[in-house]
Length: 279
Length: 307
Image (cartoon, rainbow over all chains, first blue to last red; front, side):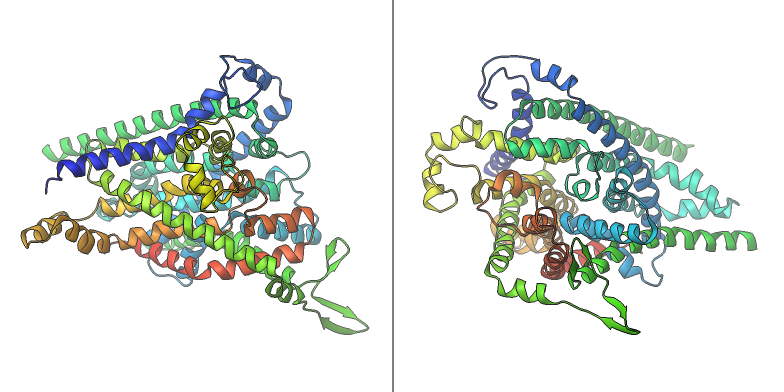
């Protein structure tokens, strides 16, 4: 069915408006990071002074380093737990407590973060009272982020795992591969793209989280979003725009590069399969 | 064969067991502690244990006064109600904006669809906190959106509708709060709708047209019912986190917009009243329990492996 001309124009218009809505704030962040004006959202001329102010901002820099560290370990651990959980849900359709398990995997996706943060903190306080550890700090922030990251990683990996053809794994097993070999030689290469997107997604989630970090951080462990949030609460602040611009640029380059490589790998794989079929 | 089998069984229990135990310890167990603390008594700055041994007698003290207080105090009731109201309005707006968006995206040329999908995902990858902060600049005086809205006189209408306190005052209002939440959660609505709509069998629409249905009738009686799962998944992805949202009301909502996430935050961080914060959290979970169950059901069905 061909859409009518009205439909096409209406669709194009609606989507353009939608994209303007989605991208306008990002554009404004970038533009006003170069704004030489005492009024933060009134354009007066070009400057780089907010960037040089940023380079001298020790609070921001140390918070950034901590956030990168927490995000890196969150992404790696989320990948491990997410892969296990996705495997459990896709490969084993029957085990006791499966409903509870899938419920617990999915709930952190939507559960308001104030509830997750409060409950994790109260548990850690109780544990600390009984055992004397862990102190609140980067370790406890990591635990909270991991809970969220694991849920997102599971969704991404699960979506890929369930489209895989199980016959490939069965064939490898018939040819004498051990379960571990099947996993590393057959399954892992086929889900590697989803692992990459899951890693990037959980990394950015952790780098962005305010609420869990606020509950779980201790004195001396302030993450970047906590610094940004405390400044943004007070009002408009051009150094925040400068940080934002740098994050936007890095993320945009990272995501575009990653999706380019993912698309290329996918093309090569289909090409190989086509060649193998012809041979 | 025997070694392979035992390897498989061990592998199976590890694959299921490790994430299971992790979730029990870090998700379910902490929530049970919150329930416990919500009925505990504070002893100075620490909460008392529920079970105590005094004079060789074990006594169990449960304090339900927080729950009684929450049901009797008007402020909490009003705040819960207005949180649900703002979340529901946001969900409706996301659906109204997102459904046509996802629909036209799914009907675009297959070659451009990956690029469109990427464009929807990109803002989602860049910091949500910073994008919410950006609206603060856009809606304050001199901001681009502020100038556009006051320029066409829309602020008069918003003020007349009670969405902002007075014309020319866009920030710290129900308007800025709902705008910020709609903006933030729109991709969460578009993505499940798109994945649902792009899988639809278009021959059904052809059949309907052949049988004499107008495009509108075909859309309303075929496309919409078939995308029910996407509508429900998207709506729950928006509604549930919005009820307990904290960052957006704190940055854009101002003191007048009552949201329960902020009440919980203040009870915990400002008043240091841990039992009260726990009670607020437990009641919030009770409120979102039904949407949560619906979400889990649809999520589980969507993830079912086609046998």
